[in-house]
Amino acid sequence: MTPSNGKLTPRERMRRAMNHKEPDRVPFDFGSTAVTSIAGLAYEKLKKHLGVESETEILAKQGMVAFVDERILEKFQVDTRPLMIGAPDNWRDIEVDELTYQDEWGVQWQRTEESNSYFLLKGGLEGDENGTLEALRRYQWPDPKDPGRYRGLAERARKLHEDTDYSVVFTSAATFWADAEWIRGFGDFYSDLVTNKKFVHELLDKLLEIRLDMTERSLVEVDGYVDVILTGDDLGTQNGPMLSVPMYEEFIKPRQKILFDAVRKGAPDAKILYHCDGCIDMFLPHLIEIGIDGLNPVQVSAKNMGDTKRLKREFGQDLFFWGGVDTGRVIPFGTRDEVFEEVKRRIDDMGEGGGYVLNFVHNIQDEVPPENVCAMFEAALEYGEY
Image 1 (cartoon, rainbow, N blue to C red):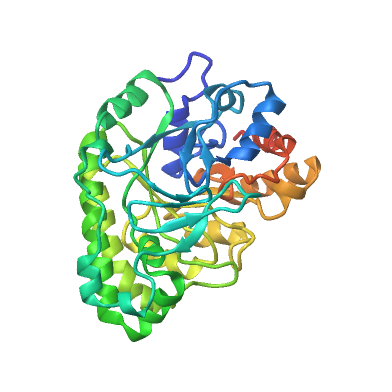
Image 2: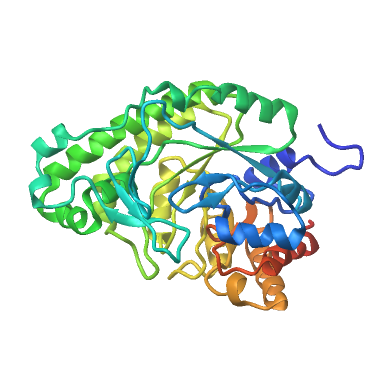
């Protein structure tokens, strides 16, 4: 319903923007996914700055990303709310030591004593001896049928949809490429793309099988209750693509199409939001062809991605953009005036005619001053009205 003051509800605002129509103002996201939130230490500083006392709950372990307190979301007038698959019943991460753990995919993650986030240490199939079909078939894979993943999911989705006016963003399992990179290890995996193709295809097919099963099971639970479904796989670096377009067409695109088709079938009324960092403009026509609706995070510090006016002009008929506020320099190191200028530029470039959801580029990191987080939302309210 539309409030009596004539303003749109958050869900209405988001739907209009994602359908390339101008709402009353640009909608905002903060904390709806593990790639649009805030790292734990930065979150502690933000809570202190805002006078919010609450226990920090972790949304995603690897990046130590926080769930954002409802009071902060309301203060910033955020239009989105998160929905996640649950943890499996039959797996608990293995604590290798106080700084290292192994996840259910057999991948080890480690942090330093100075860091709050974990970084890739070792994949379960790293090494020449593990680049074989036999090693692949012996591997211990996660169970996509584990009931813990889906228990209570439908009820949580229904409650968010029926008891709030917010746009519900569901983080799906429709991803596989990063799994392969991590399990095999980046060096071995990218060598395999050239020298061990049969192994790569079998690895990707196995990952697709598991991820497709998880995706289809979860969508049965949430269909009709969610507005946005997050998918994604990183294809870009700061200065260029991680692989060539022909390699993308051979290894990734056909499998992504299978996943995106399953998402569309399982939740036909939801928008597909694709998360991918880096320089990726060369892949956008392919991703549009196979069904994505929106792009996050629009990493403006990466090659070819900073001219957001061009991206809007070339791809804005087919894609809505979600993100774009620079976290490479402006948000962590800029002045208040620079934050305001950055927000105004991205709204001017990507907001005309709808099709823009304002958010930072990826998660707020530990060095970001809370004053700049607040300044972004202040600027968004000042410049975001249509």
